[in-house]
Amino acid sequence: MKQKGLIQTIIEGIQDACLIWREELRQVVKDEGVLIFFIIVPLAYPLLYSWIYNNETVEEVPVVVVDDSHSFMSRQFLRMCDASSEVKVAYYASDMDEAKMLLGRQAAKAIYHIPADFQTSVMRMTPTAVSVYCDMSLMLTYKAAYQTALTVSQRMSTAIRLKLAGNYTHREDQIQAQPLQFDAVPIFNPTGGYGSAVLPAVLMLIFQQTLVLGIGLSAGTARESNRFRDLVPIQKHYHGTFRIVLGKSMCYFMIFAVMGTWLTVVVPRLFNFPHLAQWQDLLALMLPYTLACIFFGITVSCLVRYRENVMLLVVFVSVPLLFLSGASWPQSNIPGYWQGISWLFPSTFGIRAFVRLNTMGGTMSDVLPEYRALWLQMAAYFLVACLVYRYQIMLARRHALERLDFLKRKRVKH
Image (cartoon, rainbow, N blue to C red; front, side, top):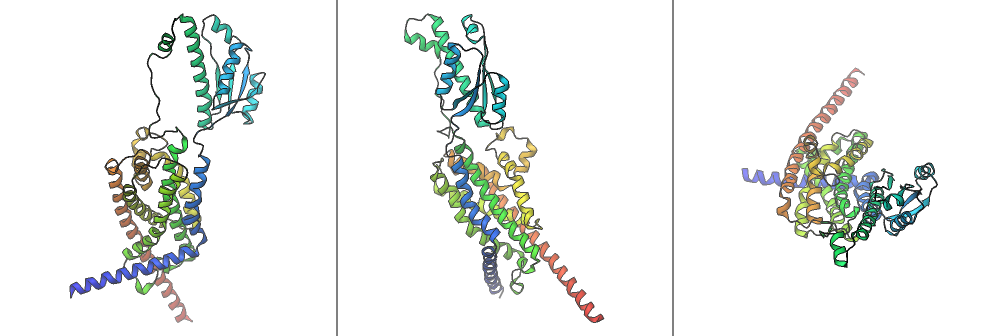
């Protein structure tokens, strides 16, 4: 008899979960805002980001030149800078005030100032310098302008040194110019581009944020409408919070299994970002990451009172989460207490594992700590979501009973 009762309970639980799944899917389809965050944003947002950074590196950064030397060597320096792919000598200014005006109008991104004694100092074998003033609002343009000036100055210095050395053979010149040869190879990023370095992490963050936004938006709509049946989809079929959380998560998992494939498999191949992960490893990673994000989103949605709240909350933490993941800032330089805070979010471990698998060509053995952390997060947030839903359902029932009692007393008085 006990075995039959257990089997009957399991069958009823599956039926209730499927009923809640269907009800939640119906609510998702009816809500235009949730559809935007569940479907349109995950489809379009990665394409926009990837298209913007598809060039990987900045080229032809406009610079303004203040040439007080007007000498052969200053013109040679500027020709070599202009010949590079990173910099374009766009303007010549008569003084620094005019150059600063062009920089302030964003017509140029940097200023090259060549002093009046530039060639004279070189001929006298005394040190001289070219001053580089950069717009620091965008690090990519700053890097291009500064690195170009540095590279050109080093090559000119090497050429001057070789002329003064008095070597007899070309081999002697090569040894003196570069006694120790080296090959600069960007590890895991052959193009040395910004897109290949950052976009894989951004894709995983988009996955989490759109999922949390959609779930929070749905929960905010339910609370604004005061729909008790959205917490307990159909009262006569409700027997536990486990079934509610399971039914809702089945709906979200069905949608984001497709969105996750789009973000982690299709988009990197469309824009030729590194995609070195084996499909088995990628599938094994995305399963706990998707579930952890779903239960995390359900937990966060319980804090949402109005639809707008979740947008403000999620958008506010998006940039900090990218930094805390270690993708755009070294993980070793993040303070310990901030690293502890980052462990609360599935994106931290999901981004690190995905980058190591898909960009660095690692295997599951290389991401075991992150993989285990995602399963732990999944279990923890599932438990928290059940507890919070249980509390909210009891609170909603109490308010309903109080309202019913109030109406009864009011009817008796009349």
